[in-house]
Amino acid sequence: VLLAGAALRLVAPDDMEYKADEIWTFERTKPSPERPFPWLGMPSSAGIENPGMSVWVFMALGKLFRVDNPVSLARVVQWLNVAAILLQVAFACRCVPWPDREFWLWSAAFLCVNPLAVLFHRKIWPPSVLPILILVLLIAWWFRERRFAAFVWGLVGATIGQIHMGGFHFAAGAVLWTWWFGDKRTAWKSWT
Image (cartoon, rainbow, N blue to C red; front, side, top):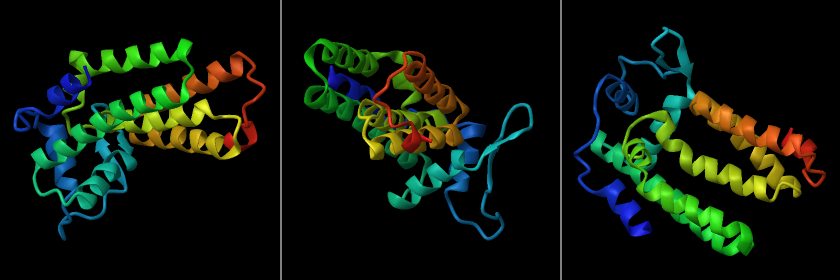
């Protein structure tokens, strides 16, 4: 299933969506004297500009991996998502006890072959870079009794919301779940 998930994300890299949103994002990854640094992200359909981190993440990936065309940038996103799935399986096998490990492994298996996940993991689109960050958030949450892990959980939770609003919803769900069930072992001061 892991091989199928990787293959579905990496096969036919030219077969990608490249319309106005993707064009806007890719163009911002290339420095240009005519275009100043984008302090804010792409305007939404309501005309409100997204936070800058929604485009900065692609600028950083483009620079880090020396991306020179849209297919290469989409390829970086694809590899990040393959890495997220592999990291989830590795984490589950190494750190999660058996009764719960089965859920983590099934989750990875379903993620590998879910058609919508495959589609979104092949795009130059802010939500497409969230899976690796959400996994870091989940790993930090797993060790939330440790101050450093709780700090990482809080930091990543705030960061993913700056990349895409859906990240705030996921982070808020983790916080509410932990608070609602009164988890006494959470290092809340470090999270804050």
